[in-house]
Length: 131
Ligand code: CTP
Picture 1: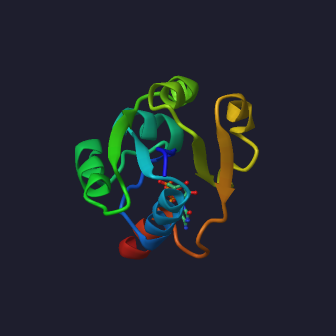
Picture 2: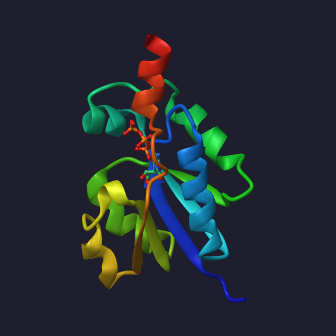
């Protein structure tokens, strides 16, 4: 099979089964899965809070997964097109919380939105632990 690169992006803080399922499904579409992990600064700008785990720790966890071939720092949301070109993406995968938002990249690669795993998110896990 010729090389087929799938790229996805996310914070992946407090790693949970919703993250795992998305990454495994993404990898099953191609031969290589490349994951852009949001930097701490980007996460703060996006979600208004610092992640529980630092970008170094989050990348280490993601890189250790069987379904992941390589990881890089996603420093800016605006650079998605540059990253897709740099990593020669054939497919961009995102969860359907982003449905439609990345259709502009269809000129660079295929864009696929996966249904999120219901009833789990980093925000909910943090709130559950706080209670
Ligand atoms: N994701 C998923 N199913 C979930 C949670 C996340 O498929 N239950 C996917 C998202 O759609 C995204 C990727 O995992 O493509 C990374 O999501 P991220 O924002 O890091 O995780 P969340 O749990 O959604 O975090 P938060 O609660 O902080 O928004």
